[in-house]
Amino acid sequence: MKLGLYGINIGPCVDPATALRVAVAAEAAGFESLWTAEHVVLPEPQPPESPIPASEPFIHPAVALAHIAGHTRSIRLGTGVIILPQHNPVVLAKELASLDYVSGGRLLFGLGTGYIPQEFAACGIPYEERGARADESIAVLRDLWTSPKPRFEGRFFRYAEIDAHPRPIQRPHPPIIVGGMSSAAHRRAVALGDGWYGFGLDPAATGQHLAGLRQAATEVARPASLGPLEISITPYIDVDRNVLEQYAALGVQRLILRPPGADADAIVEFVERMARLLG
Image (cartoon, rainbow, N blue to C red; front, side, top):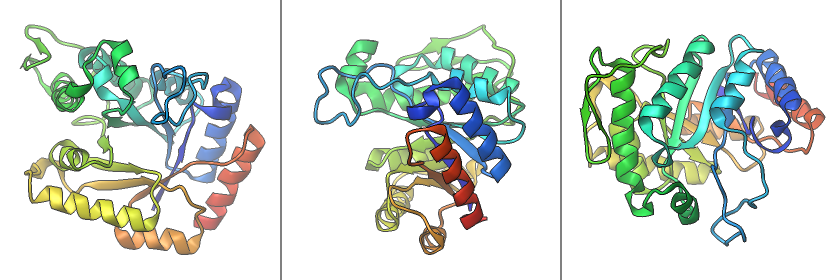
């Protein structure tokens, strides 16, 4: 089981020094990856569907992970998740390729489609188009990262006679991990993703979503080139050896833990404790 740590650009880790201390501690403890969250803006006043107040700071994922990349050597750098349809994928391809390049090939690209209409309105993106835009954006990213002569003609994006370098170090490209717990997200992960990411799930709920992924596999084709779908989960429960074994028995390959605590000391203590428990 690979172990990730969630929230390296939010909460206490908004402070750059805290983020570096936590990142270095996680790498030393044997964690496989560090993960960011993303919101470009948040609605004010806070509506019931938004669990986060607008005053909560979020460092841009690429900025936070580039900051960490310069002070670590091997720990992988995950976006968990970038709200893909809010981004121009041509620009995002450059940002993420640059991050993979400067980090020596450590990017894990996690994406989602978003759930807050006010955020989409502020970005000028129709909320009802978010799924279609996400699917097309994945195709754009793959094309710009891998094609010797990038060319694309889609509903939302089109280009020809261009190129962009540097390409990502990882070949054919950084892993594309599809987040989301709807049936559409399950189908997107099966058809387009190297992995699937479920957030805030206990073992029982994880099992239900894995059944949803199996159902999706009967509805959409999975290209053989993608290989097996890697499963990542952020639990919202305390993790001990018994809980770890429950996730492992379900086929989960990565647990991305959300640390408790309001300061660097508490997060570092959590990282070291979990490494001892699960190592």
